[in-house]
Image (cartoon, rainbow, N blue to C red; front, side, top):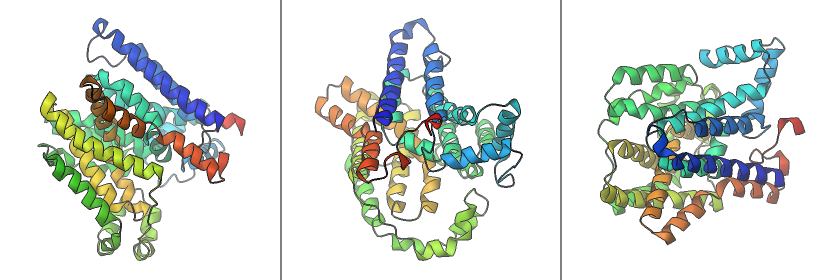
Length: 380
């Protein structure tokens, strides 16, 4: 537990410190400059911690074994993995690099894409840095490595929606499909997100989240959605497709309302209320309204499907990284507006998740075997 606490705490603090230091010298660099030494250091440090982990995240060992098998001349799952992933994996193996370097690359892409998307809004980076490590983001990125990269790329591609550059957006999605084929589902969102549509009234917006939560608590209605099987046939979820009928027969998987679940739910409800109040006061740009639309509807859909099978939740991950923008922008302007009580409440809810999952692992008896507890590969 101590190692896990130290790693997560130190990583969060270092990323926060680098982001704050960058703001101190903001006037000396271009306002939209991405390749600052602080950003490069932050990405490199995050990539190192991301790559050196062992059995942190449910898919981590699977990716390690795929890499080791390729080193030994066995191309496992070569017929199911996307071309871009296979090419990069083969390249790293041919060069003779350790698997930690390869996995670290994906961590660098994840945080690098988010930082690039926020290159014109660097004032949010200190909060983003903390929320990546201490909020629910770290474990999600660790769990779904390839899809998380596409998730972060989608945040960058919002630029092309705002600028109405359909071909650049389509090219970006095509490149994402080389990493995870389910990225094709994001193609229609170029048109869907052209004009941000979401409840402007705070009570209505929060009411939508509450209603989705109540409906999602007994998701028996989902059994009528048999069309999903055809959608899965061209995505990465082959194992789910094979067992689709069994999954549909046993779709109700209620999740307990523990501190992590309840804390994040309350955080997102507060953020929904707060953003809609702040946007009228500070006149946020279209970029931020699109980010909020993705965050809001992604949260509503998640609450509808959260008590079902993972098959329905995985595609919704594409909208979860928008919380990395909405939570920080609320925190930033709450602090700026001197709403101290609400600011500290949101901080408490936003920056406890990773530590809580580590504590829970030991309270539950799993200890170092838990996916949430950080472990170095060289200590195994």
